[in-house]
View (cartoon, rainbow, N blue to C red):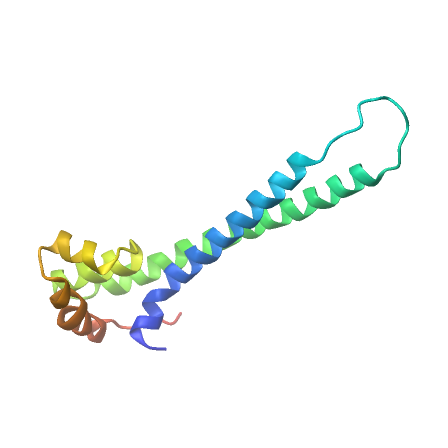
Length: 136
């Protein structure tokens, strides 16, 4: 695994969580759109079976999301430890802004008061060389 791949793990995990959040929102909307027969007349159990099935899927996805969040926290802490081990403060700041905060290059350059080319090029390359991959 390269240093860049190692550092990108947190952002990939947060993207997976965001995708799962969208899936949860769709399920919640689907459950909310199911109409209930209020006439008092007996009907088949189709609606309640569908609602129960969706509710179970929703609960499973919410559990999965919490597990993914816990994993993301562990990954971010591991990556942050590796970044903090980089002695050059500019390089460490660049890595943190990019791989933990997920900022685009232009925003990083603005915050660090460097040109985007310098941040994206030499400084980033040097910072990646200093990362020690922590494989626990």
